[in-house]
Amino acid sequence: MTQRLVSVWQPYFLASETPDAAVKAATELEELGYSRIWFSAGFDQHVPPRFREILDGTKRIGVAPGIVSIWHSSPAEVAAYAQDAQRAHPGRFLLGLGASHAVLVESNGTDYRKPYSKMVEYLDALDVAGLGPEQRVLAALGPRMLTLSHDRAAGAHPYFTPAEHTAEARTAVGPDRLLTPEVAVVLEADPAAARATARQYTTGYLSLPNYTNNLRRFGWTDEDLADGGSDRLVDALIPWGTAEQVAAGIEKHFQAGADEVAIQVLNGGDATRFPAEAFQALAVILI
Image (cartoon, rainbow, N blue to C red; front, side):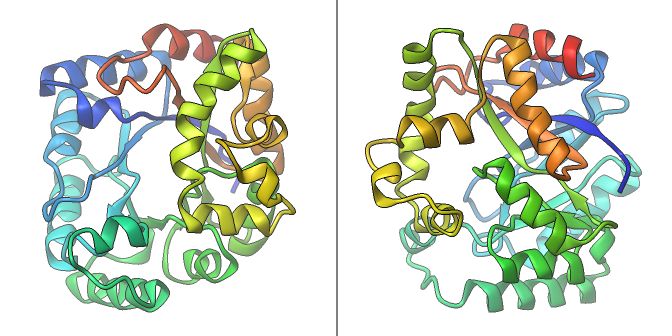
């Protein structure tokens, strides 16, 4: 695909206290020229209304769950939600689906077995409900899920991956599918401070086998994965520095084959604070 889209991935949009606050931030991003807003749908049974609230309160910007867990929300409900959003705002809602993680799924008493097969069954049910491949993307890390992103979806939405994975993902999904990795960043020029902020984020993700197994495929060792990640791993996963340096890190994913990069600005783990200035600074360079 030839498009080059700069989007936002930010937990603020689910964590914000009111819909009005979320819509205000979304409007700011829309005016800056960002293409889409991604955020988690959480792990409750129902898809949150926040996606529709943002669509209803803005004019052009797209919205996508990153992701809806296939273990928590039923295919029928998800299909109805997506179809309703598309009818109200044609072309602006993209469904992101993922198999989540065993520790999150089993905490609710569900047996996390055969996630690939579960995803295939879920996609089959969406097809029956009338929500076709062109309206969904898959959270994909390994080769099988990336291939499924080509065969049964509009593309892939990798998360917590270096640019090397983006290059592999482009080969796997082919030239005609959307590839939109999430890339977390830290706008901080001091190396110690930047890496400390990054590790507040990486530490949790490096406890999840889906991510660590994927990183091992690219040669990262147990030593790299320990204690929030080695400096080398943190630097590969999390572009940090000035706005220009961060933009250069994001550019690596575009050069590796991304059509769209969903930028997550890390701000010390405070999901209730919207990092408006950081997105403004990055927009000047990237958009």
